[in-house]
Length: 391
Image 1 (tube, rainbow, N blue to C red):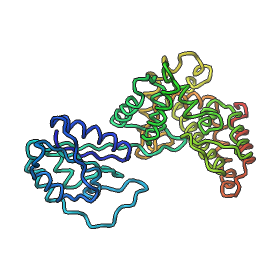
Image 2 (cartoon, rainbow, N blue to C red):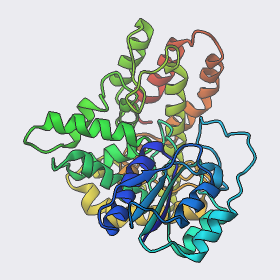
Image 3 (cartoon, one colour):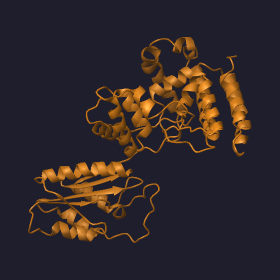
Image 4 (cartoon, one colour):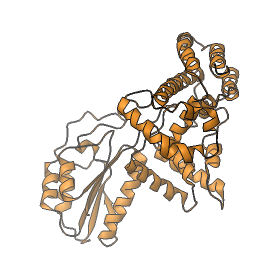
């Protein structure tokens, strides 16, 4: 395919795929070098180049790195849209419609905030190949990142190339893609760091958590602490924040001073609503006894009982009931692995404990508006919720 248009919502991913596409088209035309068009190239100047034979080369590949302004599409987040008149794309569309001269290739890229459209996209779709590479938005600390199959394939290929032959086990790959899939450039940097640390061995989940998502003094510990009813990791976070020690957010980045209280509160209250909702759904499905810790703590419970037996029924109920605390509007249900942890965690609390904590959250929420955030109020609230014994 000698005509390519690649659009992506991430600049690094666009750069990576554009390089591969250029290499493919150049190889198809005998290994020629691409001719990079200037930044002020227009559809008309590119059209002229496409129909103008060269005295020096019978095969040519033109590369236009960013044609976003030639398409109907939003600018990427954080990038200002240029307030200029839309260029006339008809000359280029006519050339594409007539077919490129023999030995000529064209590769175009576009960094867009959403999937673009317009006449050029339609013209390329008829005579060449148009690719759209979207990425998920950065997930909230309490949410699961949801990757489509296409996103999973693109990011997995990126990871494998960056790994350069160093093996990653499945859980390590999944953790990296779910946490850093929205930031491919950072993903590649972390993969290279991990491969160096692995030496001749395999990159496993423990290495990823230790080097990329350190659990100590990181919001990474919050979900597990709530689901396992462990206060110590949460108190360690609060003590660190109170002393001015650094605390990392869910992506391993430094949390701004003063943000731990509101962020931790939001994460825990969101989990509380999920736990209460899951308990009610499980009871309605006749799974109340299955939720008991003596069941969920058994060796092999997830693989033998939950993954293929219980999870599909719960997911079907969630979908019928959506939107809910477990499926946001337009979102997807948790993965079976994530749902298994939530299910086991929900069994460690009673309805009364969760509802009491949710009811008392309004008092804590009032403190969010104070500066600085009263961490002692948060400590008392967490102690009442997690530290008490089931009623």
